Amino acid sequence: MRPMFVVPLPVAGDALLDQIRRRLRDPKARIEGAMLSAGAELTTVRAEQHFWSPYLSVEVARGDDDAWTLCGRFAPEPNVWILFLGIYGILGMACLGALMFGLSQWMAGESPWALAGVPAALALVAFTYGAAFIGQGLGAEDMYRLRSFIDDCIEAAQQPPEVSDAQG
Image (tube, rainbow, N blue to C red; front, side, top):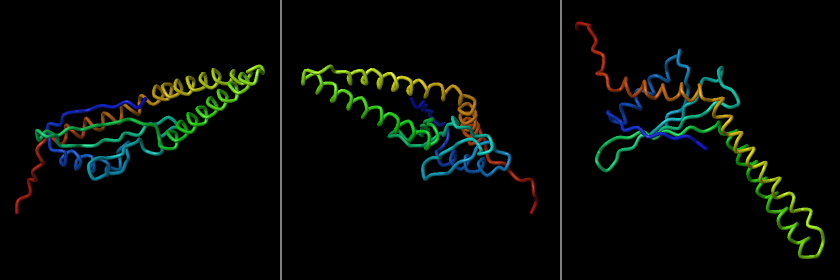
């Protein structure tokens, strides 16, 4: 449910992280975030965020062959993510409760009407799962903006540092 991508880096991870840090400081940037020791948490600026706006977690790592890779994972805002997990938890407990109560009714020779709660809970789980994909569709533009930001940072990190023309 959380889209992920892996990019082999043509530059050192530290150079990319420095470039991300520099671009996040730009007052015109439409991306904001927090830098971590080996990555960053990025999102769109608060003024442009919606309920469905994604977060992008990126991490750089050096492999055994000394090659750097960037791993990125899109996720909903943490509050939305917790909401979805809570809904799944409540529906899972409701399904289990309906199953246990319905089986108890059946074993007691009564009409197991509580078993109707099992398919109802499963239908709500499927609806919630579908809502996650609807949210991804609504946040596609933001996901594109975040991914483009990372791609631009990778490209900028490959450029040689600008040389000042100042004479001493």
